Length: 157
Image (tube, rainbow, N blue to C red; front, side, top):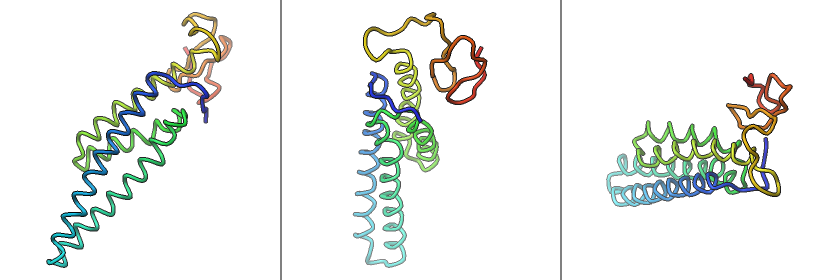
């Protein structure tokens, strides 16, 4: 995994979008757990609602660990796939706003990987025709002589 010491605007945007999605899901968990405590007078329904709240709490922790934390550490590649998985699962479980936020964050993480790959450690960004190839899948810069990406093995055009 490629962890950059540099940040990018797209990476910062992805971080913000993931954080907003996390906050919305945390609010939902608090509401569901509160509802479960109110409905506890009906043991069966109260237990089901509290169970859903606990699963939601676990979900928030997983998003934090596998999506938000790597993004804050600028490990955009490691955060990208989990963010897409969380987006799809959020959409399937009717967390529409969080799901859409995670999809946009997933796209921004891809942009961030490309921005970091095209920016030297010091100075201005490298022009696209600098004499190398960028991988369409992961954004890594490869020598012109390579037919396949050194990072992910995708065929280079």
